[in-house]
Length: 97
Image (tube, rainbow, N blue to C red):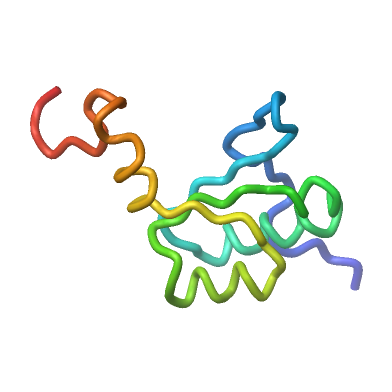
């Protein structure tokens, strides 16, 4: 019927001009998030191909779905915490900053 379903617009969380990469941060994937990411791939395949996905962990259903969709570049929260927790004040702080 020509009906448009799912998300209509999508803008990744960050664009890094020095590396010409888009970055998306996802804690979990709901249906709306999946729709947005699929449409980004459909309409911007070159940008999608280089997109970096920051996710909670590099295992599980969300990771598997993203790999199947074609995401190649992942960074997990654990990796970021290990690498930057000493240089980023208040990184994922549970107490007061």
